Length: 415
Ligand SMILES: [Zn+2]
Image (cartoon, rainbow, N blue to C red; front, side):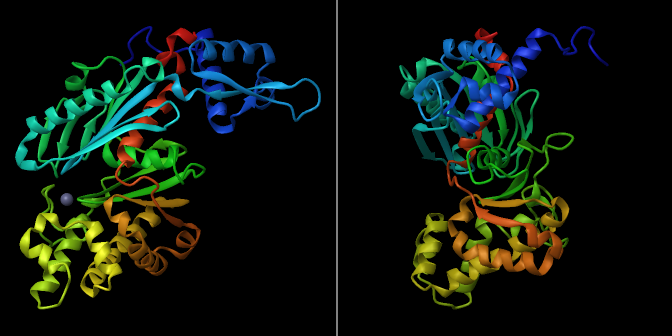
């Protein structure tokens, strides 16, 4: 069913929005750049470019910054996106932490904070901590970046209903049907984006990180859980209901242990942070010597991937073998994904990427052995640029991208 009169048609406003979007995107790609060069690159006439640029200067999204005297003739004024056009608040509710940051219009982080949480605090307490951090972020940005909140974005490790901004199911948090967008909208005006953590992390790597110039990016996020995302031509591939990228719940062992999602033997059970810890525990129980034995005996919750990496650096064979074992299972799954997706770049992120120097060689070996050779040969694998800020930076990317793609929705004054 189509609601009469609701289809978008090609009026003057649409043309202006498309042209504003092109100008903003070119400024992001090529600044500093002159009006004349923008006209040349876009094919728009100089008067149109001047009018669009003026609207963006009036709304403070673009500013004049310097002159180019290198060419023949008159020096030309150079334009750039104005970092202080506004700020974005973006965060992540993780399984055992809440991360929050503020960034300016070009993605410079201006404030950030991470708090540890525990599942036994309960959902309401974690949501309250998140709201407190959102308010702290807003206070920290008060008086900066034109006092202009461009949008709020929040990532969560679960399935999202994008039309309502509801978290439908987060197995590792044990949450169900949480109307996150409504909860935040009671406190903040403007656009609010709720998205899956791995999708946002994938987008951050594409929008700001090493995958910027790649068209078919496979992002793997290995941490407490195992997920990922596919960024195709700059857009997250969401699938029919928005749930694509739940790679960790592909069945690896049909007779395996029960996973938090209800299935048995999911890939993430062999290829996540807890798999590393479990392998170390098992070796110690079998009488092997490890410097991590003390931590595990005293307080197992203190065990972290950085500690494991530190142990490996000091020659701990048990810690090294645990990483190699998990790298082996990661590699097996990634090889299958490479065959399914045929990416031009694999970005390996999540907390396990901190052990990338030990995992990557094993993953690459599995890729070479298992992915179809034509596929594997063309595929590079790199460590993600953003560690613990990946998801939040993806939130920043979502808001900025939305302004670049729909400038009149986000900056109506430019119309
Ligand atoms: Zn599962």
